[in-house]
Length: 229
View 1 (cartoon, helix red, strand yellow):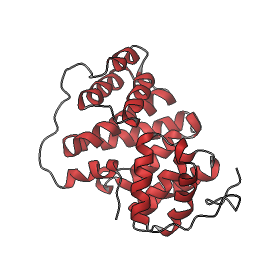
View 2 (cartoon, rainbow, N blue to C red; view 1 turned 90 degrees about the horizontal axis):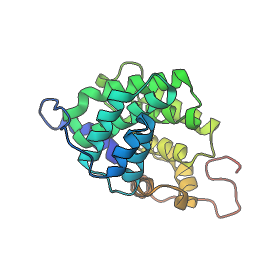
View 3 (cartoon, rainbow, N blue to C red; view 1 turned 180 degrees about the vertical axis):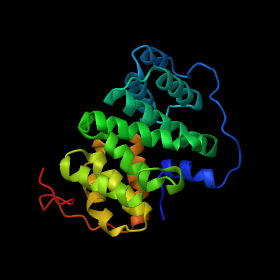
């Protein structure tokens, strides 16, 4: 079974022993995070994601971003999403040392959806659906892998033009040991691979390797995920 780096980070909680550690009080490696932090939670979240997309982020960057969103996130769809996303990135890095923060990701992603389910074309729904698929059920309160797949399938139907929706749904199927329904979504991503950010391209390659040979339609044939562009 292939699991994404995010999945491996969460599952490390099952393999390592330790206590939750506080974030170190240090500056980020990349000063642009500190600049973004002056503009609030969403800005620092976006700046961190830009670093992660190119593989340039560091532990200090993720810890700094977490401190900012924890201190400055307001009760808006944008800020609660930012807190959920940045907290998820910290968990990805720390494993068990931040496993107790998984409920925060769920709580803030749910709150973002409550405030505005269409914020950034449902990005909080994508985050929440992925979390429900990959996180141990014992750390969650309101969902499980079945709910996660339902959320991701619904998001693909609502926003088929968003390539990351297809990628996350394919990831979910493969993580649950059912690669067959992932194939059309992987094909769609493969055809449009250049449009994915760098880390998602790497995830796509890993998922394809785990799913086995793909039989993607030739150019001009029916869309591989069953949608018209």
